[in-house]
Image (cartoon, helix red, strand yellow):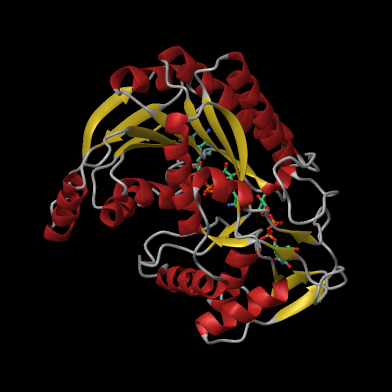
Length: 374
Ligand code: NAD
Ligand code: UFG
């Protein structure tokens, strides 16, 4: 239901949806949240309709936060907010807007009191970003600057930013620690690095800022309901959604990018973590940012690595089918091994990933299998 409509002559139309959910189960959950004396902080979630953003919105609602979901829906389905409402059992305000539109952001901040921002919005396809670097720098870097300018003016100085393990580049040894040197091998990674630097500078210049630079490793999986998950447009670039499409019969086989790495079976090793665990890490970072100022880079990973072949086997167990694959050459820019040192996340955030690879694959398959019915 659209309750409110604003025409922003600058760039975008902002639709604000407000809808109260009233099923008995949801009412019960809301009452439970209230009974816990829950927090009533309002969190702006940019890119909230995307893969990680949507799971984080559900966790935020369950934890009792109010959320404003902002997305331009360039890489998300418009049905996602309704699924978030259903799963979170709470009301959600949705702003269809662009982070590049400062005027639109000002109008949102003048209308709503916002305590903190979780900033997911951005372009994320590593493959192809080298062909359109300006799009990446404009959307991701300029978009973040625009958001921060508005936040600073409006006195909202808490940000949780989606950074990436990609900032560790290709010359560090595993497990990656937050104080390792950083580098970038493509425009996507450079955007993350530049944004990290910008946010550190902002926090250094104004001691009221609290910034968490969350360096995600490889989020996979989906909400166990199968209502939200990763649903990329076109042919997936990443391993897990590609395997899911092979299992669903949409693609004939997986290409394994190299089996001649110095790893236990020759294929690349990554730190896969369940997207719901990752989402929960944002709640912990929010809590941390309530009482801590300055900028901190923090890894969010499990600390364990799995090879491509191990992921294939786990997915086969989850879906009960064989995943056909063929080994091809290495993908340019790939490294052999990437997994996190998790000590800092445990110490500062008291956060640790709980779910294992089998659960990630089972939830991913559950989501993939439901897609044609949703
Ligand atoms: P996603 O594409 O599913 O979500 C990003 C969302 O941002 C989309 O819904 C998109 O419509 C929106 N968006 C993009 N540009 C926007 C703009 N200018 N204004 C408003 N909305 C905009 O991606 P995701 O996998 O959920 O990733 C979220 C964040 O985490 C990204 O910043 C990404 O770089 C980062 N990250 C992702 C991974 C991963 O493996 N998925 C790993 C490391 C870091
Ligand atoms: N792989 C294949 N076949 C495929 C896709 C991937 O064999 O079709 C292999 C890759 O070579 C790699 C592993 O599977 O060894 C994982 O590859 P992904 O593309 O799924 O993930 P990456 O580790 O390359 O990159 C991801 C995100 C980045 C993020 C990074 C953080 O795409 O945005 O994790 O670690 F920065």
